[in-house]
Length: 105
Length: 421
Image 1 (cartoon, each protein chain N blue to C red):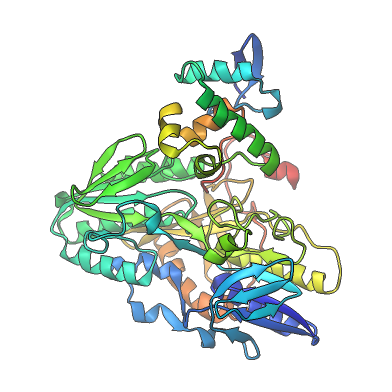
Image 2: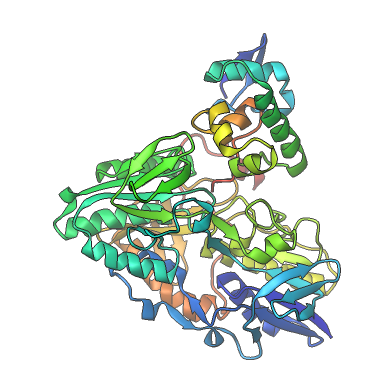
């Protein structure tokens, strides 16, 4: 597995850059990943989504899919695309240190 | 007298009902509830638009699909009252249950996407997941004189996740055979980041699409359709123009699941991965497309799950502990056009691999590779479905995925499944 340095520490990630162990996640890592993928500085809206994703994944045991995020986080689909361009479901999970959502089998 | 109720009589519900009818103790009654008068063989829906199958051969009267003694109520369920342990019918009648099996499937919801349903619906916008949609699409394809044919998957998960690929391959072959391929601009528009959800298969299918000149637009989440301008628009404001739009709309579980608070945001029932109990309920089993499980919504999955549900229902009846026996096993035929098809076989842990698959009754099939025998295998499966699978005759197939015949790259013994085995 590849390794990446975030906030001065080395972490294992999978081929698509998702953190191997989501329990290692910290808010600093979220900021580092956001910079890496081109989101830039994280706003309150970003944090609203990230917090929802972390809490929901802890409760459900799986990372939330895009529809679930747009329905339950209080941030709608259009905004999600502005906050996490191109693939918000995937990107929100990655910034939140969660595995790639499995809603797509 | 105790009561077992099965909601839904598709592949999953019918198979389970026919098995349990002969196996339940005599102090248990069994009822199946489904409002539709006929049973549709859904795998043929992919053939209908291309004139490769006719509607009359795809359905049978529902009554004829049950073993003698199965009680079928031709009614709609409006809710499940899990506290009172009652199924509520649309005429407000309440049926008490001791055990409940939810097999109510998944259903297309074009109304979830603004602009899909409207004056252009079934004029130049079609689905092929319903008998009506597939039939009207057949007529439209027959009259299509050329232009932009766009195939769009609105969002995942969908029933039979390989069906859009099959549609693309069959459409390409259809127009080539009619000598008008050069008049057709064929584009496959998907919310996924590739042609399929699993890496090896996505690569194989992706290059097949490329070889046939089928364009692929990935990570496209359809927000709306502008029927007047004939444009499909995404949430990130990309536009794909079309002359003929074939849509695979949002899929959701049955309405009563949402009404009863039993479902997730798409009205699929959160289900325990291995024993198939509904999360938080020890008297409700769920199988087939109605679950939220991370495996394909497909008839093969319903079949493999049915064995686990039958076993666990009988154990629950006797007060025994349940088996954790479902491994996510799925296999799917993929029609690739020109009389050939592919086959994939996978589970929760192992992605589709190349090799061969010992399909019982029908014979060995080539995995992840085009072959004529796979196409004939798919056609022969019709017979197996009506005559063996639905009636609950013993089918010599293991419900666990097997690594026999599969070829894996890299050192042996390093995979998740082999470690687990």
